[in-house]
Image 1: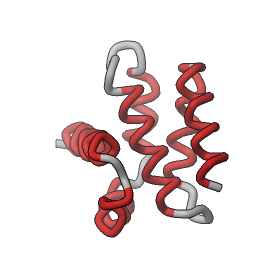
Image 2 (image 1 turned 90 degrees about the vertical axis):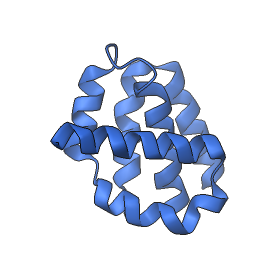
Image 3 (image 1 turned 30 degrees about the vertical axis):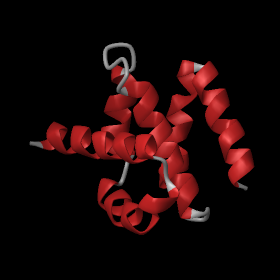
Length: 101
């Protein structure tokens, strides 16, 4: 399952319009939590690298991503993610929080 998710993430990298799918994957409840987290990290990596280009996708993420759930989900899995993935998820969470402040 994780290997299939990695392929999906790479496809999203190649097609900027597909990064909306990463938001949906991040919110899925019936998949392994590591897939949710990796999708959120990949979304953050892509979208926050060029906020102007991806402003619509970021706006969608602020509306659709359940960051409270993401915050609770990440802690038990931090050691299974790379440093970069952890940093990207933290950036995404902070970015969305700042939107509401």
